[in-house]
Length: 107
Image (cartoon, rainbow, N blue to C red; front, side, top):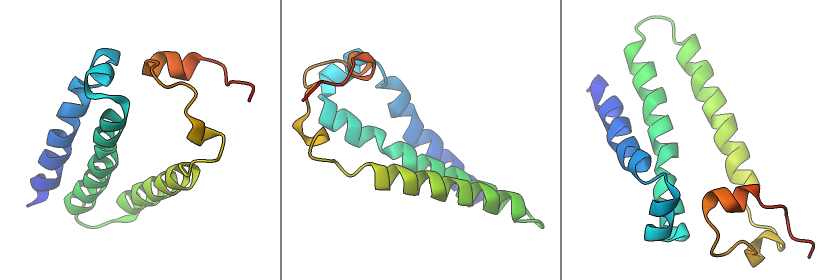
């Protein structure tokens, strides 16, 4: 049972590694690609669960990792709410690297 979460995390990360190129983003479409890459959050949670299950006596370090993951996910999801400016999607049709490297539009 302890290895179940580790194997699940690995199986979730394999398709993410395969599809992490600009070519796959264009092939899948950005919305589908982004939805698929949200599996990394589940994989991170599986890693923390595996760490908690592996530690026998002192749970402080796995709980610290769990707290760090919780804070990062909280920051990610609170910051993920689209503002009115971000909803316009000015970078539509650009690759991920072009979108990340292009300066914001002056709207």
